[in-house]
Length: 94
Image (cartoon, rainbow, N blue to C red):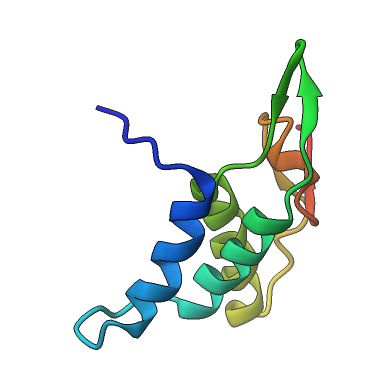
């Protein structure tokens, strides 16, 4: 089952989760960066439809970036087939 929340609700919920003292994130920096990329993702046309990078794609990309930073290894470019996600800095088409 796929859950669909409007973008504005996702943007509101992430900071609320950070405010909850009983919730801990594996990598808070990656989540914040993903939220920033998600909010700033430009809309693009793909096969006649307007798309934007979604939050899960932004999170995967930012987790990969953080892995590289933490482990001092180069992980860029990060490859994705998702045209909208390719608008996030550091990504490329395979």
